[in-house]
Image (cartoon, rainbow, N blue to C red; front, side, top):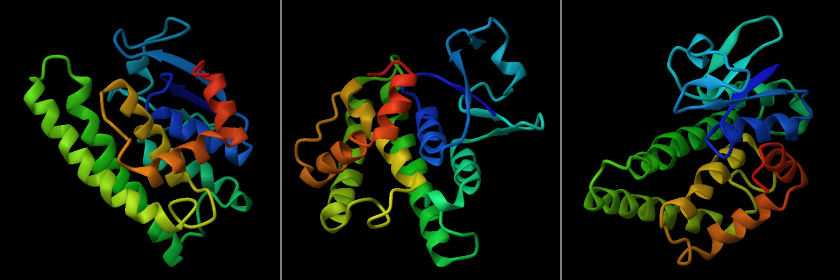
Length: 201
């Protein structure tokens, strides 16, 4: 399989899942400004939507959208515990977490990446993220990972997007449980491996 990624972007979540699952993965770095792959080819030919991640399967099919890719990769290694079995309530809880992260945290950073958006709009985005982080901090008070003691695909996703706080003047100081969680995830050997493969550490 080949994962098209940009270092530290949302594609890192899929990369972490693959490494945690022990899946062989070829990486192709994408310059999103130019929409070019590292070999000079046009990324839009891989994903006409124009954004990462994109996963090309061994049979030639292409899968896009990070949440779908993470679940697909997790399902290739059921023993990893990265995704509960399909049809179980735990699987729906995973999907609940992935949806929350996608719509309320990941997309919440959207205005902060845009240099043309006024600062007052960006501050509004930071304020909304603060409300989400307050809730997350409470949820993490009594658990190691989002779904308890087991690291799942949802953790790879939350870690990836919360890690963007350092780029956008989003203060995590008020959230002791969330900060401790980030440190736990960052300390995992497989997470470190994925970050090293992307040149992030």
